[in-house]
Length: 370
Picture 1 (tube, rainbow, N blue to C red):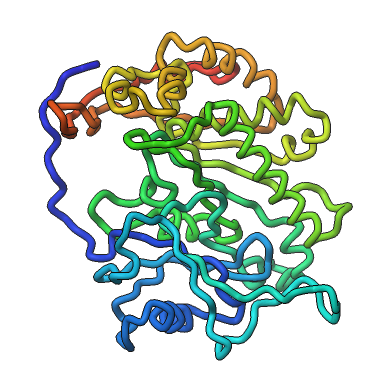
Picture 2: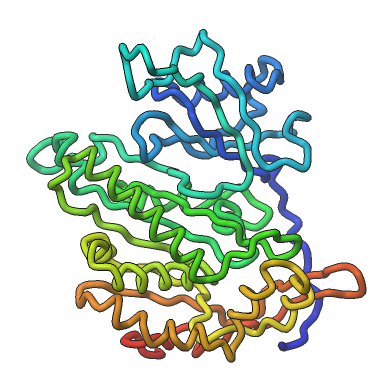
């Protein structure tokens, strides 16, 4: 580890900085409807301007919508040690579509809204509409749009947050919501979240388990896409944005897909990824070990060290698994020190350190160091 000076605090603040995910929103709801619905569920009065809608998109199941929201002041009912809350949607808002109708044995599902801060699983930030895919020959059909839609999936890193890791520090800008849709207007943009906490984690998942979870989630997504467009349609193209541990999870999922022939169609639909500070050859875990000592995730952190046999195996197997000549991995790595939590007595402080070097990030099989 390289010693450094204490990191300075960013003076710019955002009153809507804490972001919540809202799932189960009726398809008919627009942004203003979401504000009113959330205000009614949380009993926070009629001033809906205290609610900021960061994103609103159709879920992958095509039956409900998902929103990401912030509050000027967090409602009291969302201030607790919990990370998820469930509310029943008032009948005045109509019912969410049920899967089975006119079946005496079927018990209708009570429509509910789930609000959480953990963002685990898929979160759709943008689901393009049909008019986003107009061509010089006129608008494409909805069927053709679904057949050609590209999904861009972002995965956070160790100690990160599915939404917060891609957000401006101390400011409101979240580039996956606020910038990327302008550059990729025809793409469905999603997050994939998992338990990546370091301090206080109760997760005992290792890298293999995390990769398996991503692989299974992509299977479900691919199956949903196919059922929407027709089971005989080809897998829709995927691209990824992965930060830190997220890149290693992505690589592990790719290796597992290669080992199972029934996943080869899905594997071939993955066209590439952007890697941000992915520790392909391990990282300096000196400051992390005291944070996780005695916790279930201690073994995971140890497996990310520079002497990790697991990462050596991954470096050997990933280029063999992700061998499509048309695929591409683009690496980004830091050239300046960044804030890292360091234990000082019984507390943790942020110091500017170097935990990765350029070489440890970009060397990976057929993508040589540059």
